Length: 107
Length: 112
Image 1: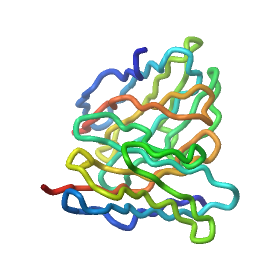
Image 2: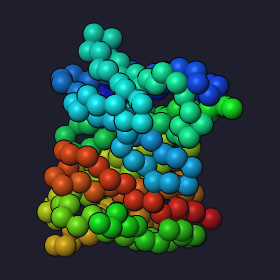
Image 3: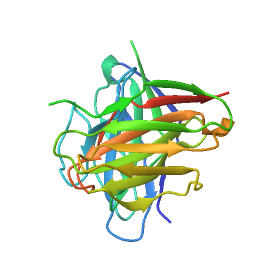
């Protein structure tokens, strides 16, 4: 069965510190993975998809098939990064989401 | 262009009643998916429609149903409401279902 695990419910860091939001998945096949973000009072929106291999708002994520991980990283956290982050796996025409991690960036 | 629009934004219903939620996708998008979001279970897939056909269904009871119209607008219906159906219901649209999904603001359903 497809499953996405985000082990941390809450990650609290200081402004300027590095951030790593963990995501592990189980999927038999070639996964397509995403990071979605939900800022306060805003709709869920796509942050990154692994096939595009781009950096958005300073965030990057690398798919590690050996470790079945897709961790989200940013070298220097900013206060505006505070939000709920969801890792998701695409299985055809549906998304399987992790439980989400709240990122709090303190000043 | 306009984003995904869900109506109504908030609903309060009584146990046993039924409810219909509406979703208007982004113009040109033919795939509409529905998700239930609760604090305990997180985001769970309900079903996906493409060109008026349900292509995929999540693990929810038959009380949850949906449909899609020729203009790609979609509705989901929940019959015989239970307290546990209280949740944020999110709709997402995409061009074909296997591309980037754009989410609506959601409909907050409270069952009392």
